[in-house]
Image (cartoon, rainbow, N blue to C red; front, side):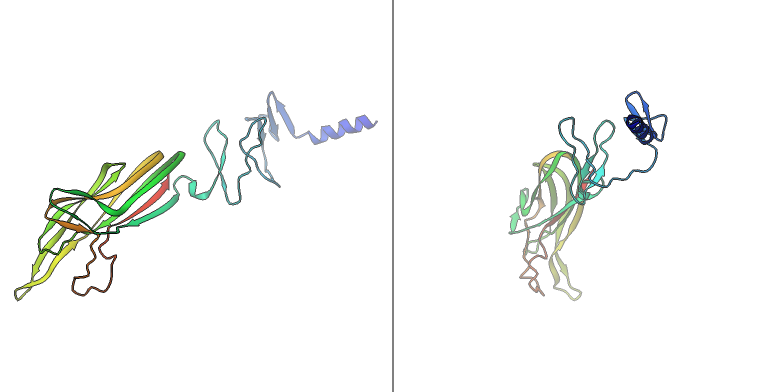
Length: 238
C-alpha cells in the first residue's frame, strides 16, 4: 500500500510533464526545446547561465542584465554600459603647451592625444568632436588643416585659418589676428584592439601657433583655455 501511494503521488506531480524523446514539455505536447514551458516561470533564487557538465553557470552580479548572444550560444550577463547602442564611456582631452608650425610643416598639437582600447570580442563606435584655433600675433593671415590620426594614419581633417587684420571705419586697424575656429566630427567603428588618436596641424600658408594663450589681446581677462584645441570622444557599443 505504501509503495502504491508513492507511485500515485509521483504520477500526480509529474502529470503536467510531457516527454518527447530528449525534449520535455510542461503544459505542451509538442516541446520545441530540451525544456519547453507553456506558462509562467518564477525564479526565487539566482538564475545561472552558461557553464557545462562540470562547471556551474554564472549568476552575474547585482545590476547586470541578461542579453542574448545569438543562436546556439549561451546568454550572458552584461553591465548596462556594454549593451549594443548604449554609450560605453566619454573621454575629453585638451591642449597643453603652445606649439608653432611654419609654412609646409605638420606638427602634433600638444596634449590632444588619447589611447583607447576596444575589449576582446567587442565592436565599438568612436564619435570625435574636435574644436581648434590657430593664431599668431604677426598681423598676417594663415591657413592650414587640423588633422585627426588613428595609429599614425590620417582619417579626417578640417580647414582652419586666421584673418590678419580688419581695418576700422575711419582708418587704422580695428581688429587684428582674428582666429577663425573650426569644429569637425568623425566617426569610426573598430573591433577589439588598442588605438591611439592624435590631432596634428598642417600649415598651408603662414606661420601659426596652436594652444595660444591670448594674454596680449585687448580685453583679455585670464581665460587661458580660450584658444586651446579640444577633443571629446563618445564611445558607443555596436
